[in-house]
Length: 346
Image (cartoon, rainbow, N blue to C red; front, side, top):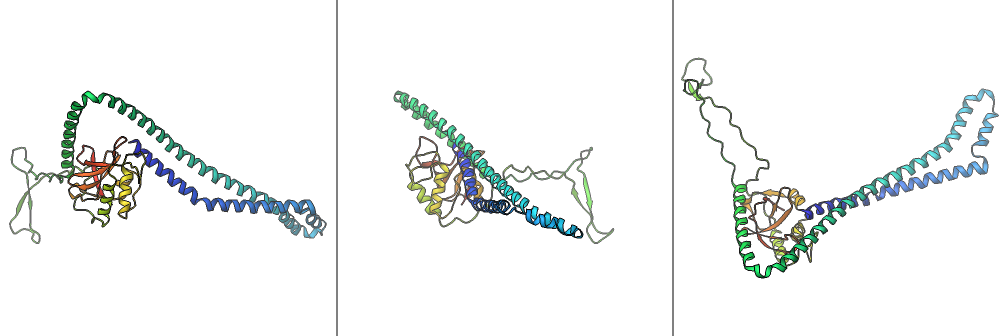
């Protein structure tokens, strides 16, 4: 579960990194506008210092004839507005640039902090698992036969539960019950009279029982029916690639070629089949077409958990290849598990 949460957080952080890169041109344009505004303000300031800026023009206009008062006022305002405009343009460009940078940096820090927090939780969980496995290894000497027997019994129980779950998900929805006539208070069915179209009085009449409309319960997530989309030509390459990874270690966040987590394995395998998938079991489920469990074909992906936290690649015969959890290697496993939730076809 922590692996899947971290993969999703890392995907979001990666998307924000891409957004930050995409805003580079916007930052460059803001820098250009700021430089232009700074240059304009500098030239206006130099002009004001060396030549008195707008002062000579203003003095000449003041000394003009009194009948030109309206024209004088217009030119004085124009001269002063040039200096004011340079200052306003500089401050506006500077504020835009700083606001954009602050917004992007805050968003990036938040995404990274979330990913780092989940990574720390995952490392703490891994340390706890490693400690428990070490203690178990020390106690397994004399208990090995009993442990093997109990494990085999548990595996059979889990597989039986998984087969029941599979049968439930794969079964077609039940047909609605046939309508029953409603009886009157005297015990006889209540009927209505129906006349054939095209006549007003003559002709035989037919009777039909009056029944309430049947109500249909809509499942929360109806299972897909039918064979689904055609299997892509790259499915065999995806399965062969997954087989070639058997025995490689599970590593949190691993996506090959030396180690894998569950969605990293399916992503790596289907990349060899020509299909790109996200590095997250839940995102993979959302990204591909869903298929009925009765229509599973090698190369299809099978998903587990609600919310989804695990995925494997189906290879036929009720078997999948998976990268399960820390302490295991990529392996074959039965798809018949009680948390089986559905299947999809890349």
